[in-house]
Image (cartoon, rainbow, N blue to C red; front, side, top):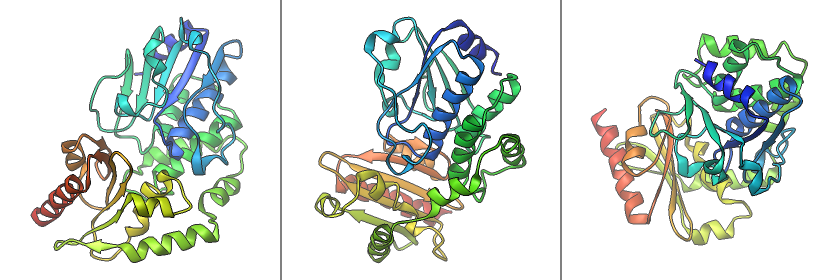
Length: 312
């Protein structure tokens, strides 16, 4: 299924690699992994990675993005990774590239690129990129394998989520044939500053429950400004403070900003993605998000989750 994309890569000497904004480990892992993979196999091509800052994943080798002039996109190939919606792509200049391709594992919502491989059977985009490398006969390097393995670890919840399959372990095993230190990955992913532990404790105390046991946290923009943390840390970083509460199968984190409310929805049992789609969002079946205009709309979404939980 990768033949057309591989041919595109062979055809273009200038390549720019994109992913979604406010990147998680899978977005960065697939982007860095793809860049290293292509540099290893096509050393004479000009290959760059673009996007906003890496945030808490700045520890990853290659996480500092490249500066690319607008004119570089003329006659270039743009590769878009781990992104289900066009508005989420970090660096909209992909639209000016001569050709575009996409690798993604989110539930399909729209066509973004000229050539696309979208497959929800993979626990991560990194898994999909690894499959591309193996099927295409491309050489992995320690740098590409380490980045791709990091993304697989983060998007599978350290191989814990039910998206993890036998294929996940097959691909992880292929990556581990390269020489990289998993201790370095885990130390950076799971070691935490004491200040962040204190922040998580504050959020645990903010947890509330709907009548049908949907757990939720709502952070106002005034509260957000009072925390010594960026919006991504509060929004996506704090949603799983509600994971593993006995009797809670759905949880949601609301983070109010100046112009919208960010919503992160998770479930360990039910497909909640349709609720996110209703409010203009999307993502995976059990891990998805949206942006709503205000608190009233956020509470309407919460009520939909409450009703959904009642029905199931």
